[in-house]
Amino acid sequence: MPTNDTIAALATPIGQAGIGIIRVSGPLSLGIAKEVFRPKNRGFDPRSHHLCFGHLYDPSSGTTLDEVLLTFMKAPHSYTREDIIEINSHSGYTLLYKILKIVLAQGARLARPGEFTLRAFLNGRIDLTQAEAVIDLINSQSERGLHLASLQVQGIFRAKIDALCQNAINVLAHVEAVIDFPEEEVDIMSKKDLSRVIEEDLIKPIQSLIEAHSSRIWVDGVNTVIVGRVNAGKSSLLNLLLNEQRAIVTSTPGTTRDVIESTINLDGLPLCLTDTAGFGEIKNEVERIGIHLTRKRLAKADFLLVVIDQSRPLAQDDLNIIAHSQGKKALIVINKIDLPCKINREAEQRAFGGMPVVRISALTGQGLDQLRKAIKDCIVEGEPDLSSSQAAPNLRHREALSDALQFFKDAGLKTREGAPMEIVALEFSSGLDALGGITGKTTSEDVLDRIFSRFCLGK
Image (tube, rainbow, N blue to C red; front, side, top):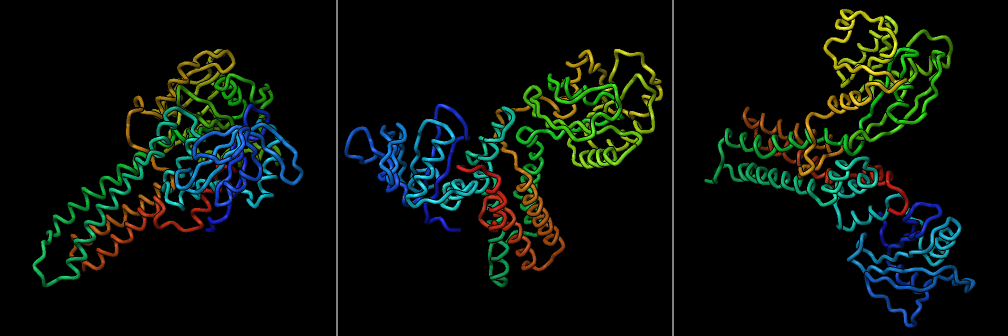
């Protein structure tokens, strides 16, 4: 990937604001600054990491555009380990676009999404886990998620992976010594001891990291789907939780035909709420598509809010929805407690099968506090430990850890079975490659493209 050219992009959101920032990185950065910037005090000789006050002008016309503050950060002491300048101007779409256009005319090119952070990775300032944590910092939806992302930016997760790699290298060195010097008197562990070291130094720590993946809900949010029969009150429940009229609510069955999504922060826990079309008799093609979308959302949900209308007897559609909820985290929300109950308690117990239940009126708000507590209790067991130093791996990390775990388990099994050490060494090498893919030591260009394409321009 070429990193010897100079890139530029807007580093702040587009729109009217007090300040807008244009970021430039690469070998032409300082030269561009000297071409487009005129300091208030003559004799521009910028010091690294100091703000300089002056005017930005267009060299092609000599027109002064704005009063700005310019920062020069000399390599390697910058975000990308390249020369960087940042132009702090007033913010407005036309002004920032003009400044960026002037910078590009001096030899820079427009940066691709995430290219500044990609250069930081390629130039060795950060590893791939820290680069991904930058996205998490930007997208975190809770204090706990912010804490986990911050730990990863600091390199906590990378340090754990590096320690695992070193443990694997130590064992692999022993295995290769046995292969290279079969007749020599080397300090050889017994197969039992070797298997124990693999278990204690590799398998158990990796399993602990995989289990920590569940903490990602604080970063990514909980994919929560509201599901139920037609006219059970799903949209009313969504509006109640959001405390706003997000979904249309009428007495006409089947009002919700499409998927409606919103996000709330429930006592620090981010919930990505999805209201779906109600289950019931399909009368037309639009309703059929709505139910199809609902089933797809059900399959991908982390958590389900199953809405039951207590003013109607349980129907087969209710039972089918409950059956779909088996095997997932789910909460039965019995709605319309402001109306007479027509659900037999014995039928209720048989249908719900021990699933947690909360009773509310989405119309009056009765039971809202109990609902919020029940949701959190279903998803989170106990209070989160904000002082924990365990950074949570993302899905890509988890898959790589699972691959490494299987390789090391196979190595331990083959050791106990007396397989040739060459085969054991091959398993260890494969496990090391899987771990190296987490930090970027053995990561393909396609994976890098996929990761950094998620970034915004200017980051």
